[in-house]
Amino acid sequence: MGSGVAALAIIGAAGGTALGLSSHGTTTTSSQSQGSTTLPGGGSGTSGGTGGGTNGFTVPGYGSGSGSDGSSGSSGSGSSSGTGTQTAATPATTAQKKGVVTIDTVMNYDTSSQAAGTGMILTSDGFVLTNNHVVQGATSITVTDETTGKQYQAEVVGTDATHDVAVLKLQDASGLSTVALDDDGEPSTGDAVTDVGNAEGTGNLVAAAGTVTALDQDIQVQSESGTGTESLQGLIQVAAQIVPGDSGGPVLDSEGEVVGMATAASSGSAEVTGYAIPITTAKAIADKILAGESSDTITIGLPAFLGVEVASTATSPTTAGVPVAGTVDGSGAAAAGLVAGDTITSLDGTAVASNDALTAAIRAHSVGDRVQVGYTDASGAAHTVTVTLTAGPAA
Image (cartoon, rainbow, N blue to C red):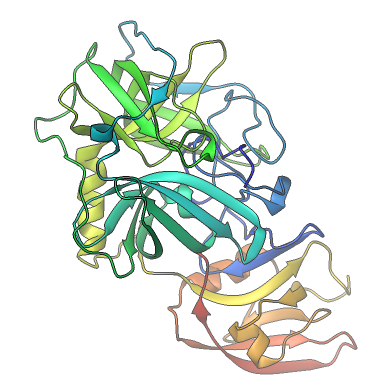
């Protein structure tokens, strides 16, 4: 896997249905808006562009790269005070590694498109807290417990794209060491902190010492393509060398307890400004996910998935609808016989004229639901088929 691991940043629904499965201008439709860019510190793809690391937003001004961190400018709000110090990262100590995992994913069924990030073990039986953008679009997740070196396959328990939180479950895990969560409230401006993460996706945890420079910060983040912005609120701002791959990792206080989860970074100079979700906020969302409480922002499990690759241009310009470039093996669309050259015109009798409309219609359903898909084939003949929705990539 390449070292250009997506910079950590917010996620949130980017809009559209971009989920790069190949480099020939196709996207994949699932029940969630998947985004089509990367984040500062989340994950990155080895193939670059839309084929690699298509999973989130960058904090504007983080830097430049191919299919990785690029974008320019930055913005934010909130009262910022104090100055911070930061030093070069060093290998994490045994104590700093305790309960911390590295995360590697395959994106969108494409083994050449991979991403990397960090996570924190919450329970001894393998529930892991991370950023949503670390796993967004993932179709295979491998997690390494950095305390023991043991690898596990992981399943998505639930995600909250709006607040950039996700919970994973490690398969067949037991007796794991967990992170120590701070229970004293948020840190104060000027406090010394240390970010621990899978910097640059190398699989080796490093520690970056720094200082809390502000609390309750709101930041605007922009997609790498420049097509949209999202906001994260109530963040801890730190002066520390938070870099791509650190997303989802712990920000530790002087006692070695987790006060935040690294989620974004921006830099317009030699100094990096990092942002972390307060651990109290992240843990509260994780608790709702673990309780199975879905909401407007929380998705439990994996989203429903139609399984079509959407062509960038219509095969027949005279037919209104969503042009199909192909289907994903094993998906409901493939089983129902949809093929490249078809144009989807309706779902459950309601016309769909765009990728966004089809995504919104699928989003209203659950895995296992049966939907009626109306389409025209390449010859222009109209058909209706019943499609059973399968589980798609992580939302």
